[in-house]
Image (cartoon, rainbow, N blue to C red; front, side):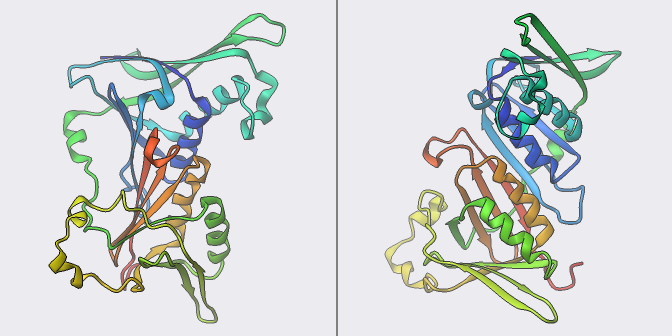
Length: 310
């Protein structure tokens, strides 16, 4: 089992891990020659939010080399806090701008970040090496190590995406930072939030308390056609009269805390699409880059709350 690569987009990987760290303490990373999958099964908290994401290797890495006896795949479990600390150091050492720029006292010029799967005292580790030149133009290297766990075939087989019914509605979400700010304010009113949308591009966020019944609405949101299930694209003419009215709202009530965890993905940016499976779940896709040329997608499953849920 061998794995070695150069992280070509440290800031993006840093943002992805920051988003995942808002949901869970650990994450499963499935490495394959073409894609890297980030998986949070959602069994760590009562909100039940899950992440099943895939990113194309060239989006994050260069000189990507992987070998294993399992179709050249390696499944690892990592502690997100430990990985986040390393990526924060790597991001700042590489001299990136933005939030990590606060740490630029250690910035290196011409920096590269290498990642390798090693073993120390029979403990698998991810070894990070940050190479560059100091402010005095001297070669400099910074090393970090974090423990990882290689998942058995049995554990891999236990990890399956949640089964969901066909979505009732897809629509492109407004700017995620805007949504995050609105949901943060609504969290002071109630613990749960009702998300509703229709095929006219209307979306509503509704919260209720003993004193307040508040609804926030958006109009004329885009309805994507490319993400409609293939069987929906081939509905026969005789069945089209069975389609619900375009103004019919489909709804799911979710935990505001769970929704806030998803909205941490505003860090990644890109287009986000929400799908509502009425009274079952909300599925959100956050694309890395434009949808038609996306370098990957972070998929969040947010379960609906039913009467009697805590």
